[in-house]
Image (cartoon, rainbow, N blue to C red; front, side):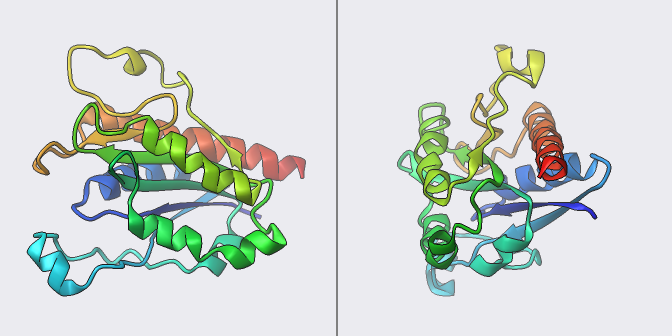
Length: 203
């Protein structure tokens, strides 16, 4: 039976979605793992999104809280808003109270990835403050640590991400994830999928 890894994200301008796609590829590269992309529901109106020049959403299916039960592991991704996850993703997690009451997600591994506007914009605080959501569900936070190797120490080019997980810098919105950032995202997907597979086999 396949190990299911869900990559669940919110992306307004496409930066987080680019990372999510690469994480899916990494997770799917592990034999016996089925990786699936999901986006959380939008909370802003079309009018507001239009004023923010947000592009149309992709055709990735929109997740409901109950869909989470089916997965063996997760990688959650979101842009930063003042050093924390975006309200759209927080609203989705706020709707998981039913799963919390029954601890349906307890013991399941989860990783985190993110996008910020600048180097001081929350590359670490966004992940750090998101861990509280996992803790209340009894989930197992899986950071990537320094398993990405030399790419973690890159100093010649701008690179998002940290030991907490993959990341990118959006700048004014025109900068998309670099090849190195995408490689780190692929690594995160593969790494977490491998751990999820091991935990499922041991259960």
